[in-house]
Image (cartoon, rainbow, N blue to C red):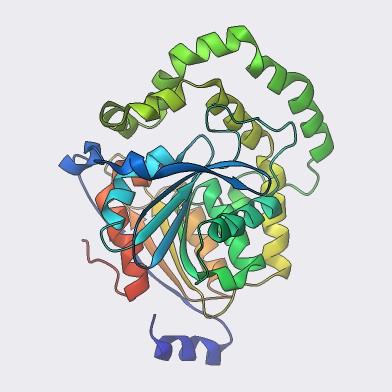
Length: 337
């Protein structure tokens, strides 16, 4: 992002959203299922905020940190990390509960706590400089909160089909306490039962593969993903975050209203327009672009509409997502027609 553009935006008192760039593709790129050779050697478990956190830390250079959405783990990022680590240091971590052996908390997720965890992961990894933060889906809400409450930690913000509070249930009247009680008394005990665990060990990879078709190729290349998807932890961690989703959207909306982004922050918003070819954009894309317009009141924002892609953009099109992420640092987005 050039200093001239920032100056213009500041003189206007707001930062205009850049026109959306459309990225197209067939969805059949050969690289989608490629096996990330040796990258598993870079996965470790570290103590963060008093508990174990699984971290993938590979490559050297400018630091890029990726944050997953609900029902997603660091293995979903392997093809992207394989490309980014050629010229960058790429870090991906799992939120507590998803990795096998993790204790799944009875408490519902808290966005402020997750923002502090992001900063703590950087500290544990010895990262002191501001980073490029990439958030997919719910992970987009996490990194946006980090940018608001820990502004010195993030220089570039990339939101990949990220959560949109107005479109995903933000409701001030939502009863957080009642939802938390239902999770503790019913949802979590049921998910922890032997029957649920036995069923999920068989059906987990099937369900996860159907929901995210690109995972099938990745599971064949990287068996650890299948092991994770079959783990009851994956089920319980996902249900926990889904139960707390509305409360987190309410918190994101509240923070956005009172804690502005750094006007020097560079923001890239990517919206997935669905796997099928279509004329125009989906309602979801329009929600994402409206969110981008909202953010552009606080900081410069670029937008990209990614065509022929499902929600898990980093699984469907890893090469292009890696190129888009890397381009944010240079301020020159890749040209796709």
